[in-house]
Length: 366
Image (cartoon, rainbow, N blue to C red):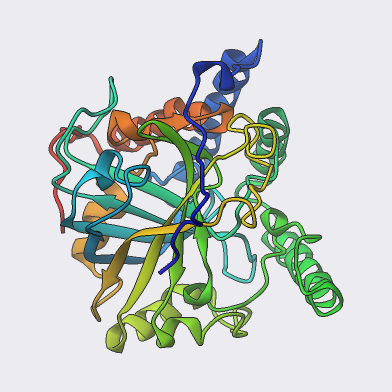
């Protein structure tokens, strides 16, 4: 369990640290429109309404989230102000808004929804008793908002097309990434979002919020780090994703049929707004100056990772958003503000296509 240095001094939040871009609203609307176009195209080709990002799910899991006792005052904030244990529903997915063969290897994500959370929730939130965390296996969001829009438009042009081309690009980028990793010990030079995610076991990875959040009086990023030996032994373990279109789903089904695991939930508090900004999610906050401090753990027991019941509820009717949660953990920065309206629009599209609007404030746990 990681603990703060004796001289640790987190920086209190100040509204001046958030500076919206002049044309931010227009850019967000273009992202919403482009995502809607992607969703319409995938619906027409598949006959099923799917998410506009992280469309392909690989595992749906239930478990519990424990908030630790006796946290220091700067960590005992919001959800973490008092100890407790909560039910969670988790979804493991990959990035694109199209359901592609797993040989098109892209960043992996874990989203989990904590149920039974009391307290003042964010104004306008679709859910009033949950706290969602959205994490990806990279500590940074590598693009500015306009660059993300440009990439999304290029992806829109390729949606439902050129799977062979995507697979070829992915294999090339993975090969480059393997060389870079051997030489430098890092795959930072690779473009995982374009298909260059290295073909390794997703349960060996650490996952990060990328964007910043309020953390009560302070500002934070979050991490989910595997700690049990059956998870840590999977770090960088190669897997075959080229011989099975649903390799990750089958891999995780096999893993969770006989394995569970524990992950530490970490909080990294900003101590210097220049080195640890909230508006630019492409800046990695230096851990040598502010380490991720453990405030809780997530536990998942062995289970069936992909069932009809789970798919019907989580894939079709549930959505995860950093804007589902307590006011004490309001998302910060331009990428987080963009996620609010875009995720909600994507969920509304899916609900409308199913012909039945679920009451989003009444979220069923599995």
